[in-house]
Amino acid sequence: MEMGVHEFLVLLQLLLFHLGIQVCGSPQSPFCESHILERYIFEAKEAQNATVACMEDCNLGENITVPDTRVNFHIWKNMEVRQKAGEVWQGLTLLSEAVLKGQTLLANSSQTPVALKLFMDKAVSSLRSLRFLLRGLGAQEGAVFVPDTPTAVPFRTFTVGTMDKLFRIYSNFLRGKLKLFLREACQREKR
Image 1 (tube, one colour):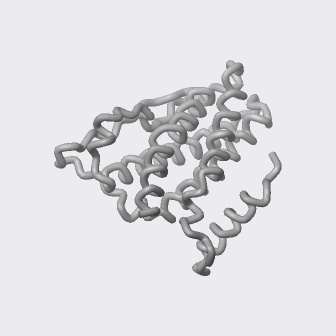
Image 2 (cartoon, rainbow, N blue to C red):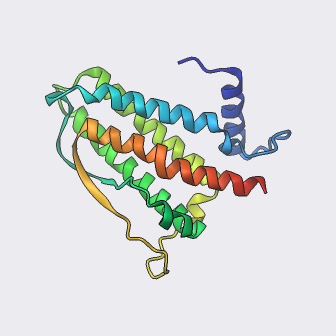
């Protein structure tokens, strides 16, 4: 996939921001550029589609814990910003651990096609970048799970044993909770 000028400038802004260099002329944080998240979502969906048809080659050999990606919109709407940040940060952290474990399991398997290993490698890199993106919006600092608050919902997980299920969770998480959180965080930043 070819990177356009706009995407290159946004990535350059992210790099400069990460290095502590102020970027002038940008009215909004580079972390709020919708093209960035949409690119990650596209790549996750591409990996999901590539693994749907595989059978034995996609077996991870053991179950891996992943976050539940379902969103109860009524509960989400009533959650405090810190709770949303906490849920998204926990989910992204668990998903990152799951993908890293999947990558290790696949690296030890001689049966896994190279193309599938490449999708896993790309997912590991993307999840690192997404964690950086969340940190840039202050999500890590605000990421606190407060179980005693009235709107608290227990952090739900389940297990998967195949690459297609792992990539489905990955894709759903990006399109669901992460996208919701980023949209709200960027709207708050505009104010």
